[in-house]
Length: 79
Image 1 (cartoon, rainbow, N blue to C red):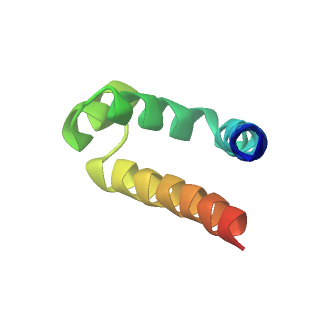
Image 2 (spheres, helix red, strand yellow; image 1 turned 30 degrees about the horizontal axis):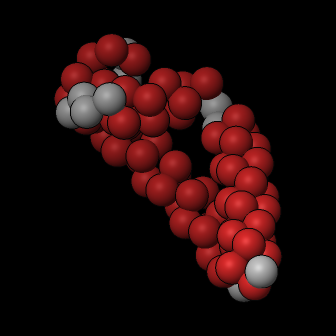
């Protein structure tokens, strides 16, 4: 029926987004990946800075760069 078709389309779109997300995450530097994982795990900017041996300002810049890449990915998907 038509509901099955829309579910299939949604699944397809999600898989495409998942692949794009994976590519975007893999395009991050190793340092940015570590920052992202630590942030997702709930660590503060200060804790992350201590862990990766960077200043809090550098970690904040990394998080901003990551947010911009993820925002670009979402906006590209909405076009």
